[in-house]
Length: 603
Image 1 (cartoon, one colour):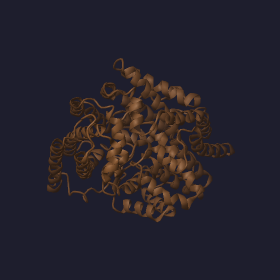
Image 2 (spheres, helix red, strand yellow):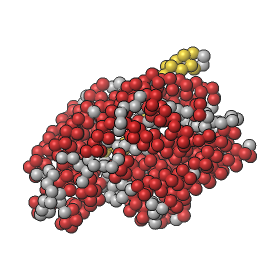
Image 3 (tube, one colour):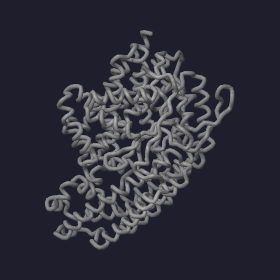
């Protein structure tokens, strides 16, 4: 039974970490961790952790490595918790000046951390890493990190250049990123509602894309586009500056392209990327078939952009937050008591911030907080899709739970594997919701999945094409707002084809997606496709052999910082360079498209 009364949506509880941002406890630990960075720098200096080619991997080097790794793991544990705590206030209210000030201090420490990690990487690059792994139990425990550091060391600039780059990033890429986040989280959009003009936060206006009234969706889309256009100039400046910085540093570090650097960061090679992207393009006609079926269901000749997330069916079911909580905990428990208790704990201990409001960032994310705790941000709107998003983010938290058994340096998971648990958990909940669903509920649930899958395969490809073209042209000069919009719509036309009305595309999607605005990570797009298809492949394996899969699954999640995606996939018999693996996962989506289309045509 669903509730018909609008609930008060929860805010996460951070008082279990510190009483408040201005508490003596927080300020004490903030001062302590800042001092710890200075102490760590002194330790690096004392032990000679600097770039030296062909140095002896002797007792001194082994002892220095063991000392540094232990100290870094401890420092990272403290620093990560403080940073997550401060960001929790910024993410939910970017106007909180006290939180912004605390985060700014911590970002200065992140620069110190970057410098230290670059020094460590360069130093490891001068050692015989196989000898180090053989002689040091600590190195054996961190073998994947050590071998990757040796490879990355070949792409480092001189120590002085790396130190300068880290310092300048604070007033360069990092500053542009913060400006983008603060600006976009505070955009208020004038829009007509019930015959009156009101101002709503951008996150609420974008949520209107799921309104059942097409006229509401159209007005929201047009108001959103107009708002992005008014804010476009500083956002374009941020994008040009960040991408220009990335290009300059990649050249100096001798990467052939930003994509090559991204592939290394994500632990995969070009053959794996090509196999996945080519398989995805093969399936575009199936996604176009889904979009045309949805158009028929909505009674329009062709979908507009603002119809992509339009609800379908007429079951009238409302997934209030309490309904979603009960359903998720039940279904997670059906899979395993450990997963179910994890979800129950997240709700019980108020790890989740669910209310959309002014100053809060849009979308959804999960961040590790301390030890086995996480915090989850969503903007809940009582739809099945919103429930699946909540299950997805809880999956990230479960991944963090499994990683928590390892030291911090061994929890560093590439984006390609970061979606592994989230897609799996989302699929558990979605398939359970389909079990006893009526026809209209089935349409709604399939639509929620297919619209998301279309985003992750088709729209992600458009974002990949856009970023590829952006880097190519930014290597020559800055791009204007109109040029960025032209690149974006061109990429959308190449991927959505004639399944969408070209007159209603979203030229400012480059301003919407915060993933472009990072000086540390480029091509923050294809890993999502990898995650979806890898997660679906894992779920198919679970369906084939449930008991055997459960035995391996938690260990797989705990190992995502210990081995490459290819090696982890090989444990389950998957070859990531083979198009067949990706086609098999895409066939899962195709089957749901077939089911959706059959229901539409039967209607």
